[in-house]
Image (cartoon, rainbow, N blue to C red; front, side, top):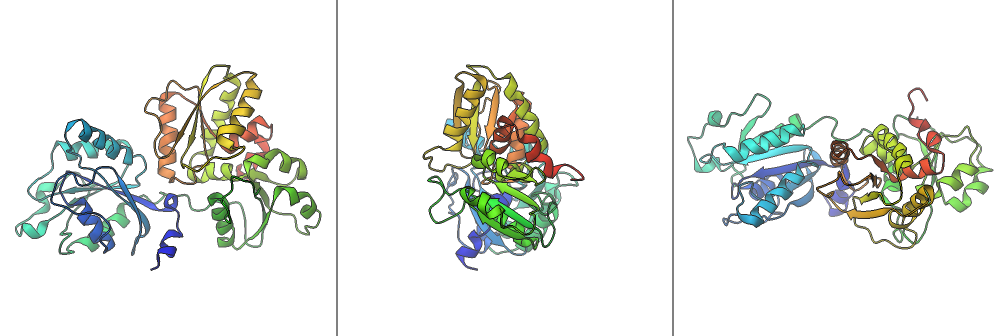
Length: 405
């Protein structure tokens, strides 16, 4: 299978499998055996893997996955504790945990702590006892955890037990690790969907942004028609449409302009609101929007983006949203920005979190972020929901998702 085909499935759409265990139990060797490729560095020196390493792969018959190689859960010293912290962070984005042990190591406090942490996050677990080729009298009876955790004996070196492990991953992976479809419950075969995609200096040269591409693919998967236009052309094209579209989806930056153009009986929403539902919990994010009314000058607002794109011009996260919030409350706010795979450890000091559309992370991680915000008592909203609220069109923007609509 070509590299291009493997990369066609974005990381955020893949099953995330975290490989955890003590140092030198053979986590990297196991990844190589699962993929039948040498993609992880293998060494007899404990602690070879330091930070989590993500590898997008196609593993038949599982399909597109992300395997996460991690540092040893028994790492030592100040640096080791930091590495263990990074490993624990992986549990917030993993869909399934593979806990690796050795036949002579048994299960102890390290493994029990990982199981406790994983179960606290509702994460399914598959136990693996590696290197059984070195122990011909091995019995899995000494590695019993609980009825819901299978124990699979394997030899990464000899390939023994690898197929059984794949079957266990398929069996125990959550069935709802990803939403089924972006638009599948909203459209039918033959429907027309209009996508308004402004082409500005922040758009990737020669490409559409990921939510636009994924939405187009989902429309085609549902045997519907996608009409892609720029915001400046919508008014003239609208006059020539023979069939009323089922829904119009726009970039949040053009929300107000598109809303003025469309008749009131046409469903209208934004890509980031679609993804609020697809990747997270739309109801929770809509509920968070009401907290805008409680903001006052000096309050702390965290703007969180899951990617680390280069910001230019009127970037929505660093320019447009801060400008709109300042105008709404009539004063300056204390803005903080974070990009990438982690949120600040302490969230309770913020008055609001404004999150991106989450196209670059998986559903598990977005739901984990919502849970962290809720536990800290901080309302969270996303870009599209916030923009629609501030422009007075949130009710219309979420109307397509109302039951019975």
